[in-house]
Structures are given as structure tokens and as C-alpha cells.
Image (cartoon, rainbow, N blue to C red; front, side):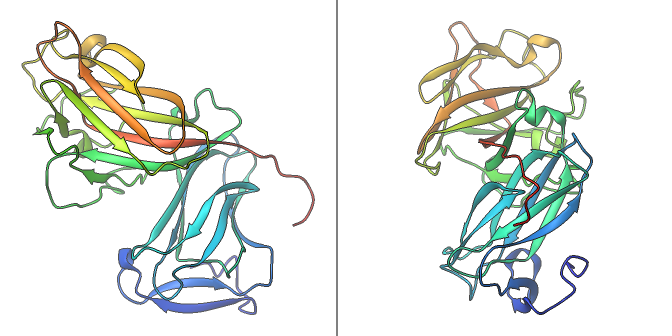
Length: 307
């Protein structure tokens, strides 16, 4: 409930919607305002990294648009023209003991069904002291299955991992492997890592839904070797983003652990082509268990003025 923030119902209306992710008759807060914004003032710890997620239902309020921001940093626009709930998720570093998650009126009154705030590992914003990340895609790679999302309590950070089986030519792998030492906080839950896609020569992941403006992006790739017979040097591959080489002769087992992740930073507009190609002399083709795509946005400092 958001009664703590908006106990007065003068500018807000409670309506019932069929919110697909949370069962029938879900509660939606509709802000009936002439202009400006309404903000949820959320408690945070200064310098800690957080995931923040707003969920916006489809239904009678479709074909509408308004903006979502963290403080005064715009995160995205809610354009609910599709027959599914919309999630807008960001990653930020708190600059004080509270953070505002705001809905900014554009052409229609803003609305929301849920706000979620979760702590995240520091590594998400490593070397990005003045940036906010907007989630584009978070993928759990596996074969055709039940299409069940994985999130809390399996993922202690409540990241939502969407099952993905493309590219269709890839070979799905699965294993009940549990003996891995990640040596880092930057890891998906084991249930995500226990499946992967592989191919004797090449894996290619194409995303054509990026914004058409030029933005910086950060991609996290997660690898857990599921074949216990593979040794270091036997599965080596090159990693390319939009035909640009990013990692050469990448070996999951090179560091002595069967788990490894890497971070790729690049500029793009409109589309992303992530390609893993078997390296010369390797016995096995590439493997990937999961990946995340995040857009880098500049953090805008708030002033002391009242909006």
C-alpha cells in the first residue's frame, strides 16, 4: 500500500484493474493532477547501490504516456499500448538517506500498481560514479520450457530473469552442478546458471529494440561451465558487439573457477548484435548462461528548489 505517502485521496483515485502479474482486481494508484509530478519518497542508505522498479498495468489506461524519474533523472516513458504490464527498472547509487521515485504528468494522469526497491551489488556501477542504468533486457538462457520468470526468493536481489531460448539454432544445456565458487557478489542465482545455450561454432543474440538515439550501454555476461569434462583451454571464444571485438580468446576456466562474468561497455543506437565465436584451436564452441543489457544515463543532481 502507498497510504504512507498518499493518505489524502483528494488528488488520487483507487481503481481496480486486472493486473496480469498480480492476479485479478489489483490495486492501481491513479494521480488526478493538472500538472507536475507525484513522488514516492523511499528510504535509502547513502552511497549504496539499488535496483528500483515501477510496474504499470495495461487495461483501460492503454495508449497513454507519462514519464518516470529517479529524482530529476529521467528513466523512461510509460507508453502502455501493449496488452501486457510494463516494467521500468533502474540501477542507481543513493546520494542521500532518501530517494524520490517520481511519475511526471505529460498528456495523461500518471498511474502505477507497484514500486519495488532492492539493494544490488556494487559492481553494477563500477567506474560509473555519475550514472544511472536503465534495464533493457535480463535473460536466462535455456531451451524451450515453461517461460517462468526467476526472481525473489531464488534471486536475493529480486532481479527478474526472463527465460530465453533464442537463437533457435543454439543447443540447450542443463546441469545440476552446485560446486562453484563465484568469488564475487556479481552472479545470477544458481538456478539461472544451471542452464545455458551453446553451439559448435557461434552464438548470436540480436536486439532490435534499443532507442534510436546514441547511448552508452553496459552488458553483463555470465558463464558457468556445465560440462565437467571440459578443461581450461578447451572452450575458448571471441566476443563481439556490433561487429567490434570486445574480448579475445575468452576462457571461462582460465581463472581456476568454473564461473566467470565479464562486463562490456559500448555505444549503440537502434540495435545490438552480441556474438560469441569459437576461437582458433578451441575444441568446443561458445557457451553463455545469462546476460543483462543496461543503458547508461547521466545522473542529474537535484537542486534545493521545490518542484
